[in-house]
Image (cartoon, rainbow, N blue to C red; front, side, top):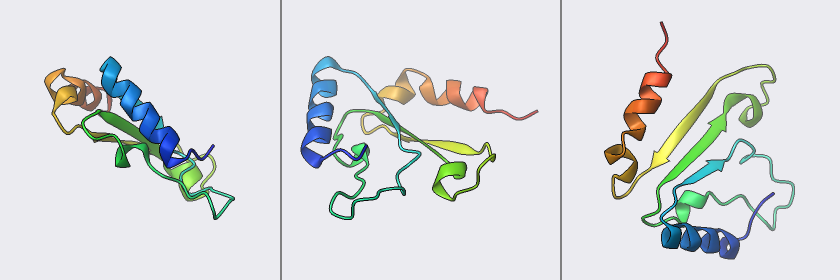
Length: 96
């Protein structure tokens, strides 16, 4: 679904109040069928709320079967870094 700016701002406000990070599955960001409702990334409205945006090659560039993705962290106040999230994800992603 493509959410409105108002809806995304509401989610961010709630997460800020509850001190919750956001994990945004934005794999289909380039697949919007209504030109009047463009995709808006939630990190655009998050302010100080930490956001982890997940995307992938298979959907974005129509490469079915490819298992290549990425995680982008928007961590304005370094909350995720301080909690060790960056290091933990880096350790999980090591290729040996």
